[in-house]
Image (tube, rainbow, N blue to C red; front, side):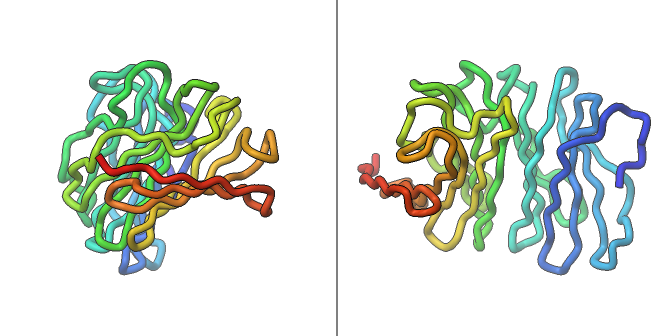
Length: 231
């Protein structure tokens, strides 16, 4: 895939598929950039590699990507950018791989290290980005929701209710899975939780505002639920 085999370690690839079967592969190129390559449905490369980030210098890696129903490509990653030396950033591109937005910082909270982003795209173009960051008990899972125009719906919110220990800690490869279906958000991660100190957990929330939450320990070990009032 990568056309620059000597440009440092090429790592952490992710693939996003458009509605017509075309797809994009996105990865960190080892020199601090997030790069991508588009492909036709038959696997033929479309154009050359392109750089997704605008900011320069420092580290960027662990991208996550998804296409909307209008075939707009959205990519998130962690690393250095405007306003945060270790944050979560994102950018939107049209079906031809041309940017339709500037790079922006996803996380409101800039204290500590925000890392290991994951992106889920809904059927109407809305999307959610999740990541791991420090919380009161160690590391936790946080997220932010956006509408189809790329405008944020509220600020950062914490996904995990159980805060003792670490959830999806980035330093040993943890990553929260994120998805949108209809009016529901789904987040899955591993870490410390009820019934298992190294288990896999699932939370569901309603959208656009996280109003109800439930935590399920995969395998049926335990379930916690609570309600959150809308602001």
